[in-house]
Image (cartoon, rainbow, N blue to C red; front, side, top):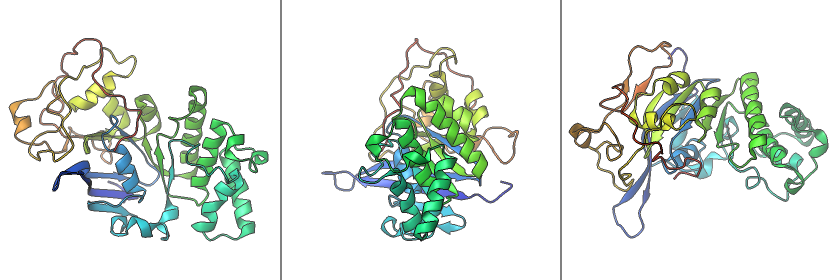
Length: 344
């Protein structure tokens, strides 16, 4: 990479003990490695239950990792327990916009109080400075000043979304994590909020991790994309290249579900259990239309797909047959589960 990553994740894992099964663990996130450069937008996609939400909570330091590193501006944040992280200077540098603006706002706080709270708790601003900063960031997100003294129930969905965005921006973060930021909004409002987020990212030079089930949105609003399946990253690369020439058969199935992409690829077979998955088996093998015997004996590693057009943004896929001819679509339906729900 030409520049040092703002965030570098190295072999990050999170396992949950399974009740009633001593020694068994659910592998929600399993040895994930990725990076985000300053000012870059990275998309994260995958089916519901693939581990996206757990990964987001790990990176936002709301949850402790089982193993691995989360290096932010040269410091390993995974070494700081989540319960202590809120009291560190790095808390202000990594902020999050949550999926449901209604659930994430305190009903007893006005919009002004909500936006100002992180200024007081994380930046130590005085009352006068907070008041000025609240009005500045409200203007940035297009929230009229006359709405600042209203409570959440007095605001529309789009207005509540702007309050949530303003709260995250108030302490001038360098990384913004967007967890399905428009999923709870009406379709008519989603495009406006997405355009706002894209404009703010470019104007402020923010790095963003954009988690979404809407592949078209990810394609349009991100520089690179990471595809997740059962706790692991199976493909990553420049967004346009991954969507135009997906190398992993799972990514091909996802992309085939985008309207206008031709016949959909139907995935049959059972999804492998994330509880104690055998390390030598490809986790997608049970559903893969091009799987071979090797896939059940040797788990594939991420490997480079040819010579990248942009050396700083290589294209990787974890498949023994990555880049092989696309399998013939089966039927007209899709075996993909909905990706709009929460993952682990």
